[in-house]
Length: 184
Ligand code: B4P
Image 1: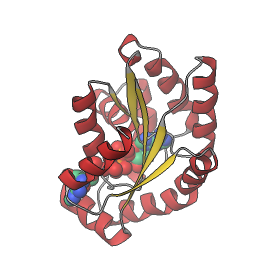
Image 2: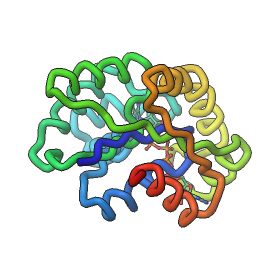
Image 3: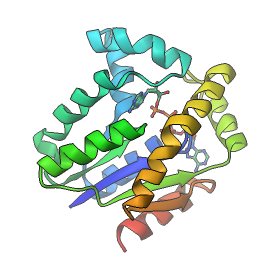
Image 4: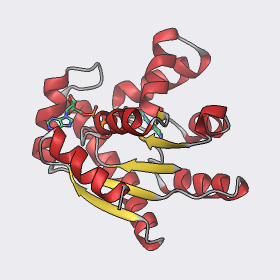
C-alpha cells in the first residue's frame, strides 16, 4: 500500500516522476493539473470555470478542487494506494486532505518534495511550450508557489512526513532517489 504526495514548484518534475512511479507500483497517478486540463479541453462546467485561472497562472479556487479530489479518492482503483500530483497546493487543501483521509481511517505515507532552483524551472517550462508556459505566467505561478504552496511544505514537516528530494538531476537519478525513499 502506497499513498504518496508529490510537492514541488511548477516544472519540478512532479508529473513526470508521478507517472513513472504510478507505472512501477501500479497505483493511480492523480494529477489535479491533468484533470483540470482535460476539463478545459472538453469544455465541461468545471473546465469553463477553471480556464481563466489556469491561463493566468493563478490557483483554481478550492471549491472547484476539493469535491473533485474527494470523489476521485473514493473510486475503487485507489484501494492499493495512489500518487497525488499537484494537490494539495495550499494549506487549506492540505487540511482538507488530512481530514478526508482521517474519515477513511487512512493517512498519507509521505510528502515527497522535489527541490529545483528557479532558473532551472523557468528553462524547463519554456522548453515544454504548454499553453500556460509563457514567461509572464511562469513568473506568476512561481509567486503563487512561494506564497501558497511553500507553507504546505511546513505543514508536512511539522507532521514528520516531509521527504526532501533533489529534483535538479537527470530524470533517472530523480526516480532512483524517490524509490530509495519510498522503499526504505
Ligand atoms: P500542474 O499541472 O500541477 O503543473 P506544473 O506544476 O506546471 O508541472 P510539474 O511539476 O508536474 O512539471 P512536469 O513534470 O510536467 O499545474 C498547472 C495549473 O493547474 C496550475 O498553475 C493551476 O492553475 C492549476 N492547478 C493544478 N492543481 C491545482 C490545485 N490543487 N489547486 C488549484 N489549482 C490547481 O515537468 C516540467 C517539464 O520539465 C517537462 O517538460 C519535463 O519533461 C521536464 N523535466 C521533468 N523532470 C526533468 C529532469 N529531471 N530534468 C530535465 N527536465 C525535466
